[in-house]
Image 1 (cartoon, one colour):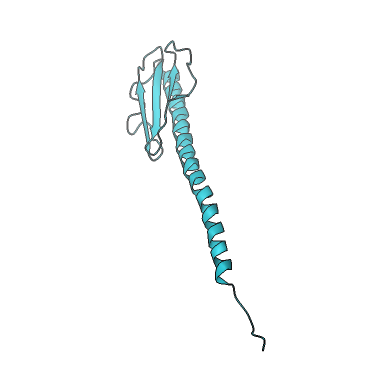
Image 2: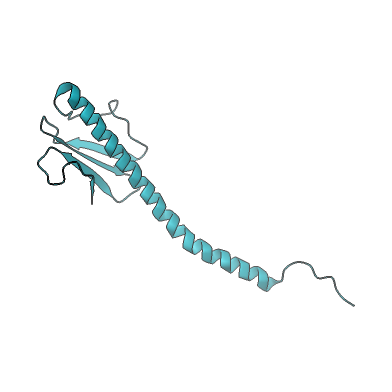
Length: 122
């Protein structure tokens, strides 16, 4: 009397579930950190766009715009907070951050800083 055995045993199913759980435990933290890196990249991109907008304004008026980041003048990506400070004929400083990231990025142009023109972060 041989029985026709088909399917998986309970032990085999439990082993597969444990393996899937281990893989998920490894993958989920990696996914979370990649999301924050994507938010940071978006903030840096908007910061570079703000620098371009300031330079375009300067080329036509010979002074940097203190309100270049005002609504209607510069459109940011979703979740990005960006601001300009210390804008004058001699330079400007722009700060950008994403709502879902713990990093803030800034750049100073012509303000006498040793890091002028380099994107910095905290």
